[in-house]
Amino acid sequence: MPVSLMDVAARAGVARGTVSSVLNNRSAQARISPQTQERIRRAAEELGYRPNRLAQGLGKGRTNIIGLMIPGLRNPFFLSLLEAAEERAFRDGYDVLPDSAFQLRASFNIEGKLSGWPVDGVLIWVSPDKALPDFLGPWVQNLPVVYLGYRRTDNADWVAIDRDGGVRQAMEHLREKGYSRIAYLYPWQDLQPIDSRYIVYDQLCREFGIAPIKLALETLSTQTRYSLITQAGLREAGLTTGLAIARRPVGDIPDAIVCHNDLVAIGLFNGLRRGGIRVPEDVAIVGFDGIEEGLYLDKPLTSVESPGLELIQTAMDILHESLDSTTSSRPPRQVMLQSTLRLGSTT
Image (cartoon, rainbow, N blue to C red):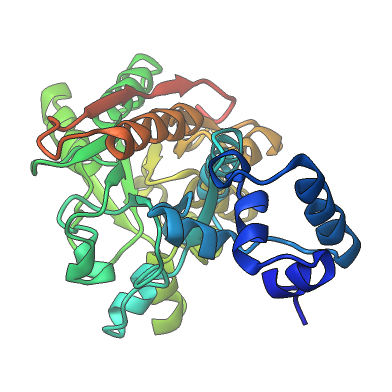
């Protein structure tokens, strides 16, 4: 059983309130003698007392806990965001409470894990047509939040990644290399893209005078298709798609494919190679996110790098600014970060 303040008070022979004042660094205000302070701290150490940080935070009106809502942990990019958030929060005296299944819960009309938890603020990666109350309920209307990943049109704080510029860099690189049948591989078969990358790809194809080719991932089952939404199974689906493309007639195979993210691209790379297609001699591949795994393929992956560390650092700065603001009318902070094309050997 955890040691309580009452246990420490009994060992030190003082009142519970005296123990609370000493262990919460309020000894001066309570005019507690140095001798009593030392006795209380010695008693706490002997008993192995550990403070209840949540209870302390509630008493102060601040818990020093930040919620982080990201779409799954199977994608190393989102794992890197969690790691960056944990490290930054630690340095700032905060803890991070992650929820990687909030979209899954929402599909069953269940509020996210953070619902009702006394977090000071939230960072959330979600498409711009969704907002925090969609997942946690109306109680978070006034909770400080910074949206990650996407440009938004509402009056919210956000830090976005310039995917449009990344698509342009990738497409211009492919055209300079002489590719003319450039396809875009999107994860979902039965949904129109909500990400602007495909829209920019389509516009650039027309600008370059080439026909856009929209590909959807091959899926093995309803469960696999659903799991794509939560970032699971993307390598497998990319592999299956690569094998399916390799079975097409030669004239029906694109000479370059821009993939929705690196997990898709890594699976596609292996599927095409297993199907007898050479990369990049027959088909070039470009990924998105710039995850480290892509560097360790037989041929390092060409990818549009997303600045994940800078994203978290900027978002945490904005969240702290919001938490420390003395007025609710603070203008929103909205930041666009640039992505960079990392050249590999798949183009």
